Amino acid sequence: MYPKVDFPVHKYTQYDTTSCVFTFKYPVYTKIVKDQYIFDGKPMSDCWFNIDNAKLNYTLHCSYYPIDKTMNMTKMINDAFNIAGKHNTKASFRNEKLIQNPNGIEGLYFDIEGPVASPVQFFLTDNTSHFFRASLYFNAKVNPDSTQIVLDFVKTDIDTLIQTFKWKK
Image (cartoon, rainbow, N blue to C red; front, top):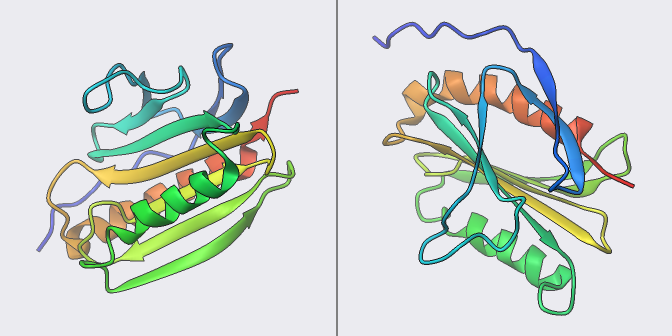
């Protein structure tokens, strides 16, 4: 038997900050926390942040990269596949879905099943100048039997983020 989870009503607010070149809707019951440190150093961009939900015990780690000679599109996409691929040893299945939202944003969504650290990852891009990547992590040991109900709830929020994501002009 698993404890009952009281889910909030899906309700969203707009993420729009002057330091980032994009905007999207995110749940009002989460908190956006700017990344201060990544491993041994500072984040590569001011637009690295986490969307935290303490009650449901998850974090959506978000990072933005401007596409240039150092961080070219091929490298960014390869990195996204490599990071998703690190979960293959524990995954029972990985589904990849193309993303095309109403704002002309494209990307790829990785739905990774099994006792993996990050069951959802995705990237969004305009294919020329901008690359946004996100990975969902539960802040506890993953037991798919007990986290599946929360994961299903969070996927609705992630889908809203993806469908409302757009680059600023």
